[in-house]
Length: 245
Length: 372
Image (cartoon, rainbow over all chains, first blue to last red; front, side, top):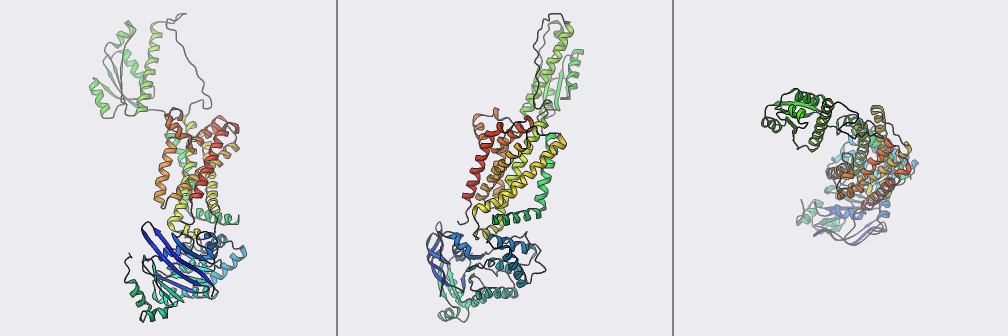
């Protein structure tokens, strides 16, 4: 299996505080990798390092074959990112957002046109295509964000709590989009607090206080922790956490 | 190049959708240029004067009516004693007290000499200074009038006097509007350019959209240019509106070459926008950005030579003003618009402003980090 993310003792310190403490793991091509952890466990920090938004304090990592220290801009060409906060332009329409980000990633005009059409079709947003994004309900915004994040067909897409605050039906639709992308060979790196979503992942890691405490497939994890559900696994691990909000 | 096109398209779409910003870009220069020059000038009028006349003679009456007829003074008190008049000053109803002593008329005619007392409320320094000197010159004129009356002109006057006639160039009526309008226009361009560019980027930080930009492979200089160009264009629009208003309302037509003026404004806008961008790279919230910009704008404006002449500032302030882009703009505006200076005359200003633009923008680009 081709490794697309490889980290070795990746650490990020903010003064005395160690947000991410010597994390090491590998993610393979086409995998849906769940990155779990309680609030404040260091998930977002780790993810920002992997995206080239934040330089690690120590440790090694390669993303899509590029070094995390020296080749951040090459990494950015090959990944998509959806942050915790909705970060498309509220005062642009859906089509304008697609056009803008497509243009920034260097898609040709024809590609942008084709992508826009198929995306609108896929999301069923014909009525809203020319409306400002600010007027969309949260669930639709999140689906749009995801579609924009994979617009340029990245090798890996990072999703930071993409379904926070989204209703169960829309969450289901969101995961359909994720599966579809994974089937095309896109590696999905996703954080979530929903344990049903954790079950959808091929493998998951659970972070506690900046360290990765467990990493396996959901079924193996349940076996290891003698638990009937992912909820229980998570509870056993996260209960010992000292950090949190 | 293609990236910049997409950035510009996005920026202009957002600007044209933001009705308030759009309105401000047009309303701000119009309203400020229409109102400020009419109100904000240095000419002191309506000086409140209290007079204590101990003489009550026809001469003293004559002097008082000369003073009130001058148009600068408003007689707000005619008191019996200095103490009462001082009371008016304490109540802020009078700025000046003129005390005419007893025997004023008699002494003037017999002795040819009389002293008077002027007390000035110096809390407002400018008003006090000008008020005092207006009053002195009115009294002097009055005195000259009496001298002429009392000693009819002979072939060789006993009181030879030198009269100085000056002719005012470039603003022959000494109109404050002519002096102020180019200055206010200079401010508008500075404020609009600086604030727009600064707040725009900080807003992207606040909303979080900049994160989505930072995670793309966009080049830093593309991003900076994508922010500079739209506001550079807006700055030129504001300047043009301002020039039209000063022509339509005040009849001020640049004496010098318009191309020279626009050339300088073009370079100047780059430096102001660069300053805004630089501040934005240091701030996380719009509130921080507002305060920092405000601090610098106040310094730039008060030391820019619009309200007070730079030449009469203390040496340290003059050194600061050399680092103040606004002072170069104000002086170039006055040179080109009022004096008709040519490109050659403003070359030093142009070079320094260009250096500002290069330094500020480079600094901003270096300080803007896509990866922290």
